[in-house]
Image (cartoon, rainbow, N blue to C red):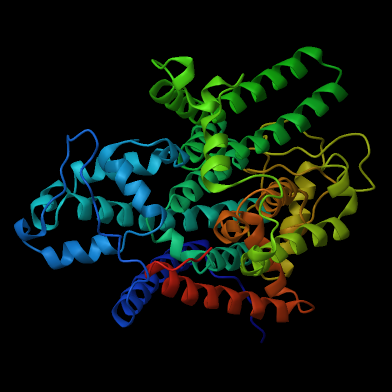
Length: 497
């Protein structure tokens, strides 16, 4: 008598993802404490905390605290960009260069330090409480982001095992140190992936505010509007095929409104900077960017203070930084090339022609409730049967169009990484990778790209494939080495991505 191999229940997968996310954060904490104990920081200026320029808040003195040693340990762990975020949470935006840091994380830190952790101020001091708030916020946000990535992966890939592998890879991703530090990666990833999950589930009223908040956490969050543009483009194309001018205009207007909503927090913050820095000054005392036709504070700061610009980082002395970023950029490039070579018609037609059999309509992206042809259910059934044959999923009942969060066109019944529904995520990753390589400080590519779901979907695909399995081992080795290296260097104030 033979037993049929079945996949673990979805609840078990979710529990495993949750446990893995928690374990990875505890592992990072243990490594940070280990390296801080064994080594001395390269830069010991982290605990310095001059009074705010407004003089409304003064720094606490260690001798007045109940646990000064704990306060010192927390404050000395606030390094690199964490210094800026904590300072902004404490004193606001005092200097022009601080406007490079979006306000969502400082707002959350300030709120938590004034509410839940307020009783700890006499114990460890205000700055330590601000730092502790930042650590708690980011580690909790990371755990929720891991769970949302699993839900998103199940929805898009329609393969629970592949979704599980991708989520576990994210839990131990090479940029892990930044998700447990006072950086904006955790909040950005939570709202970005969470927003995408709601988008592919057809909950636009929830998805758009989430994606807008991702832009309030990191400036590159505004690029998530590209998913809305992609969706709108396909909906408008199908409306044109139906020869409905009104429906086409309605789709375009709705897409434009959603994109504007996603851009709104970033633009509002730029207006806030203009109000604080430019208004009330005579023209001869204005900052150069204030006089521009379109005064964009963020672009000026990145260029003037950090030297960010197209090809400006292409210098021989920056070769080590390019080598440091080469693994993540190579993985992103391989994912793009492999998808394009495997599914050229999908890729080069931007999904308008999902297969050679379907010429007269585009596949429908992220639009539950759309009227499809009669054989829609058959297509979903075929996809479910394929998953079941692989032992990945055993559905209890057949999907209907109301239950399917990401609708299929009848000809694109592939599941997993090569599904047509992965295409917008691939395009998004390609744009980010090109930006990191040609425009930004290339070493930040490791954390800049670490929030891209398709990166983990491709890695999961390699691990599962018998042909590319050896590359899966290299990916795990790469993640483990960067976790160890990052926790060692970053926590001791040495440069790392």
